[in-house]
Length: 395
Image (cartoon, rainbow, N blue to C red; front, side, top):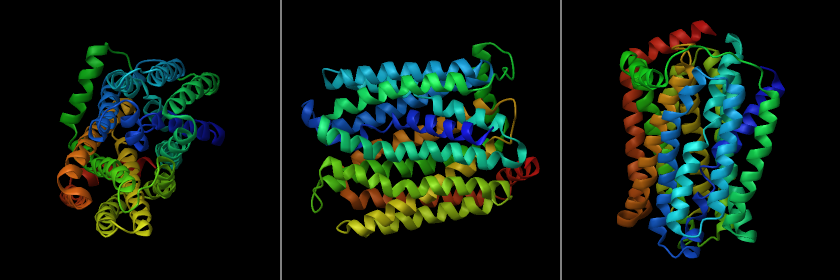
């Protein structure tokens, strides 16, 4: 796993996962253009997350039984087709269908992450996975900024069309760069899918980690979905191009994820996980005080992104220590749990905003942070400690 290949994986994964978030800062823009309400437009984020969860469940496990040098570029090309359909959608329902398909097919990033874990040596696996994951996180955040800027000057359809072209080019690069990696196991597709659930049932550490991950991602999507409504209304009333720029503040989370990989390699995974949970609680406290202060909004973004992305990386690195042969399936379970939590968080954001505004969103986010802290506190003396010890031994 050379440095250049690691950076290519990070870039490609960021481009792929960014497809999930092109629409997030454009909800009001799309609602006006396609003659629907902002609340209805908010369901585009939920539809994308649900589609992504389905893609993770049905496609990512194939990384354990198929040639990933072919599988990953093929999935990039499929996402390019879905992006083109989004760009050409004539109605809101057509866009909702296309963006659900986009979510299902834009799973290359979650195939690249376990592949990076397989190609990296034991002593540097946390750092390599951290770099790739930081690329995914950068894609999530930069996609919002790029989306807002492009849509402000060229319309929201342009961003989907441009992303489709980029996906085709990156697919070609990956096909040339990924080394031949033989499948790690052989089994039928039904048995492969069933083995994901069996691993979750048999490994208590996996279940505890899934609960931590889902709580964190629910906080993340709830905050960012509601933030669009906050910044587009009084007292801010920012245009979509400015709202997109707030995504740059979250780059601190991507940098934190890269550093978290080093913490994992040094055996500090569990204490850092608890600190990340506590930091997310602090972030929502800051956010609650930020209703009329753009400076506090930025501080809340930075603190929450550092917390959630550190939590995400540490959870994922520990899971990869559970089984070498089933890393794609473990990643399937982990990311599915995350994005089910994310879909719930984004859907809840619209409902909470409609009934209680920003204060309701912050209260719900703080409650989720308390849940994550409780899961960590209860699990750290049992299954989570076992997994941390196994990953530390591998390092």
